[in-house]
Length: 92
Image (tube, rainbow, N blue to C red; front, side, top):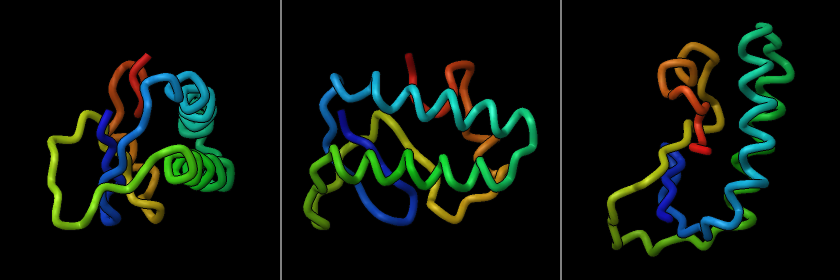
């Protein structure tokens, strides 16, 4: 799967990693619902760090359709809320 982190670029990520990422996504969703700004920021950064760790960056001159788009690390609560689907940021 091709994942884009807004403002950073694209990475390829094996579908098998979605289970790990969904745990952080669920935690992020709970923090957003409770208005926990500090927890939200911590978990968003942890989620993006995991995507960077598990994924392989695509070269800058390659542009593929992204199957998953994640917010920039400095995205605010309202901005992330607009990006959510029923499953959160990550499907499944």
